[in-house]
Image 1 (spheres, rainbow, N blue to C red):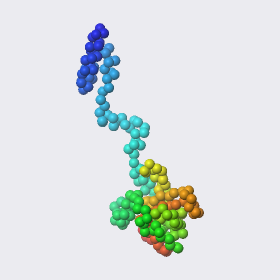
Image 2 (cartoon, rainbow, N blue to C red):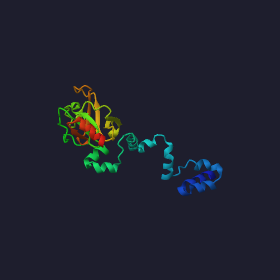
Image 3 (cartoon, one colour):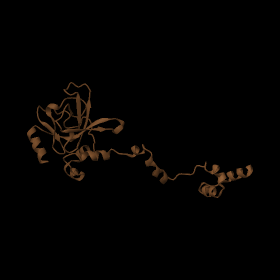
Image 4 (spheres, rainbow, N blue to C red):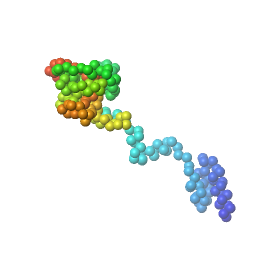
Length: 216
């Protein structure tokens, strides 16, 4: 009897994988302990169907794009991407709408220090920063220690394996740059709003800036 069981088991192991199941079915149930131990191949489709049951699998395939689109719903200026392309230059669209960055030291307003005036959003003309908010930081981008109240919205940016605070225009959601705290600059807020020049426009007349926003 032992010899017969051993012979049956060896026959099952030597059978190609595709026919093991059928061979096992034909075999008496008392030999099931042999073929139940044989690992059968799992198809790609079966694996993908099983993936949602694993709690953390979704995080590997998730994107921040959905969260960004949800945030955009709260902005008053709801122009479509095609509408933005029609009014912005390619560089403005890349930075304001696609969250790009200009090269350090190349921006129009990096070394721009007027005595008065206001910096507005290059996309929707909303007033963002006053000339009195600007200071010399040496970082290569325009730096501001404060903004017009309510003009800038902050978001957590977890790209590039680090956590930063992104700043966007509260009126249209256009990307401005990032804000950093506790760097030791001698400013009233100890904050540095690091902003792309491409995201801004400047006017000496603060009243005109408000009127331009109303027309946008």
